[in-house]
Length: 329
Image (cartoon, rainbow, N blue to C red):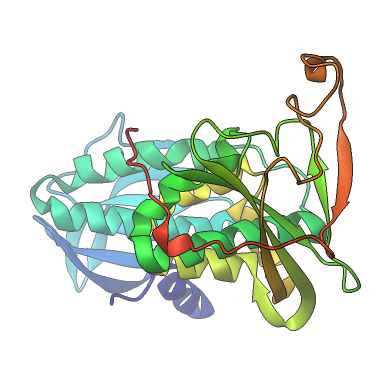
């Protein structure tokens, strides 16, 4: 497996070049005009150098608050060569840029004859993610919730492969975190050591799905220096074949920014227990179906309540048997 661009950039940044030059390494991927280089500039900013046939001005030269793209003639091994240079401007996005660079290299590998077009097409897909405004840092409780959902996603990928990503619908605004063809799952996390209490937000989270049964999957997590962070989990999922941009976009919809991964790496969790429950008529909840008189749920706002799962009957939930919908379904 090819080394990640992020790790190459990190290695190169330890020995930046003199002002005005790049410290580079061959990527192992070639365009029709030569080998693509991973590099850092004199300021340690990660860059991708894609050889092109000639220097072209105009739409290939632009910059934003996060990225810059230009065409420039550079001297490599004593020879002058025009390059399309994609550079990360924002130091908070260096890791995210490494993932973008991986996608660019893959695109060039698939279409080396028209490498500039491959670069531009890939960049266009990623630009919204790079230009998105970052909010305040998430707290430990919010990170625990994301860790719980990513843990379910990781378990799903073991038997269903990367297509399991299509089932993660919570960040898209669906009332349930995971939606399958035959059931839905709401995922909850708690860091309480003494009891299994989870918080339900709104009157829709535990309402019946359009198809099949609804399950509540609760994970009890412990914050520990020997555990795993959300950024580490994200890297594992990408290494398992998840499409980088799609995963980061979903995380962004869940208010998680990869640009803050350096801060989040310090928040680590270990799983203490995992329990699942069938949401049926015997399960305590506030929804449009359970509220009396019926039809009044929409008049209530800011619904939030906690459920103690400690003495409730658990059920078996086999994630390997759920039916994943296709992306277009």
